[in-house]
Length: 630
Image (cartoon, rainbow, N blue to C red; front, side):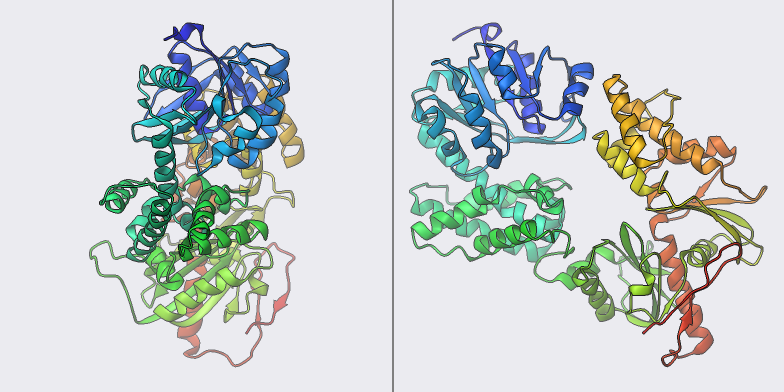
């Protein structure tokens, strides 16, 4: 067996699988070359290396990094192994480019999930040169060059497709095993069985989680979905047996035990469905259906999920139905119900009132009882011209709560005909915060498209308010766009920024110019931590220019502060005060809408008959419109 220091490996595709493998092969002593098309990721890896966090901790630097396979072939690398760690639908074009590697002794490694994925490489390289790897580790990207390793369930498996490369499979397995990534070399029959085993596990949850917008943990916690999952596995096992692939008698039980250990995150394919990206469904449930037809084995559930995923990704309806599969209404209520902290009994009755905040990014639903206690909250991504999702939520709410009166607010309030009245988010914000914080106060609301500062008087009424200009600078959409350009996971921004000592902020507030400035920062080698803090500094300085009442409490609400807690530290520093955050700040406005609905009901004791309700106007605004409601 050769010394790993003499082995040259190139990895094409730097998602979590490729990045973790690259780090481990480099630790083993191999000469590792990387190929990554994304220029931002390429520059981050060049300057900061690949960082592993979570289950594995390391920082590894690489000398040879190329943006295309063509660049690698021109470099005449004389490779021993070429690893494809790409999505299955990316393989054909990449493999054709790699034909320029002329070495007869080059070994190809297929590191994709799915059944028959190696068949994408065999027509190009021949079965005698291809190794199939079944990977049992995974992670999520928290930055372009940072992988949060979420699990490793050893071992990985690797085998030669026709056993001609068995020695090379043993070598590759040893390199990884020696650095803690236990990998077993197995024969061609066993690798086929292991690839089916892994695909059955992936197929049992991935499509269902994508369609139902469920994490693995959520899917395994619901009895209805657990029953579905078991039936999906049972169908696949029957198909495998028809293909002469035998599993132990307790295989389904083992699968369910394995899946119950799944974390509170989305499988890769589910993430693709939710984000409307192309999926590998054809090599997951789709392959089970294909082989089922070959042997006349019914695969109804696998077929259903295959077709649903295809329909959702083909027609851009990926976010239609949140909630559990089987019973959407039941799943919605289960997710949104608010339990009494002093009791395990879920509130289920009495007079209730609904507030709906139709924001630019999310629709927020809040239901309160007659004492203004919150009994239900739900968040739904705002959809363009698609009403099916919000109708499902409304139906679920109306079936479980006796809604006496409702109020809509936010950008889309005038088009929400299901509500009894409509109010501006200014008044609703004041009402929501004033439930718990009485008297004069400042309210800072950073939303998806604007920033508001609201002044309340001693009677909790709106005395005045200020808004940023029409540009969305410093808002939630600005944050998301800039973070996307920098390839920073929004959920990780606060954590990253907190590690920075940077004092440099973005000078550009227009999203277009800010994106260019971010690119310059990246090319200048500024760290992802400093970029994160620079974005927050810019927003904090923008907010600090807005007028606050002196010597009164200041309260912050909105989705941005809910998801970016580090921003609070910067704002406290800028204002020189201790800013309060209400409970569940993203729902403050919808809570206020529900409170206003309750007050209207109490004052009138009945719903008005076809009387138009005017939209409130606050001091200092030029708004003066009315909207006809249901």
